[in-house]
Image: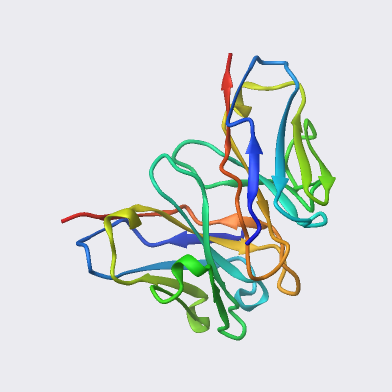
Length: 121
Length: 108
């Protein structure tokens, strides 16, 4: 079945970087956009950006431009999200999620299980 | 950027009730609107897309309506499993996928 499986929890110090992976299975990796969404403890959902796995093209929410990098490896059907210059307010669950379509914007029908990133000195 | 405003923030109801959650967009988004349910410690689950289309496997007691700037999620005959947090999301363009702040549906 269609699955997105993310890498495990991370603990990082302020100023460091973190890279989270999202391994996909059960569908053609290049046929659907992948998004990244974060959720701080007790807070709502915040969209970060997307990657087009077919072209490698990316788009970032303004808040995350310059500090977040989305990449993919089509040979292993895996997407990555890297956040640099981590701050304490980056402590959150990070989710990857699949867009329902490639050709037009759509809802997110499959989500990863989430990766907790804790930033603490 | 398009802002999404949900109301109410918290809603108390009983099993068997019918409830409605509202989501307003700061500008027209046609029907590019989704609803998600999220339980504590879990990833969100897609309920409704394109404002009123029910995702496969979602019970028919969930329904969505609206277009333009005003949208509603209605849950009929509330079941114990429905007490969760609900989020709306707009996806009008590839340059923004904004979520509402969430509505917590709790047992009265």
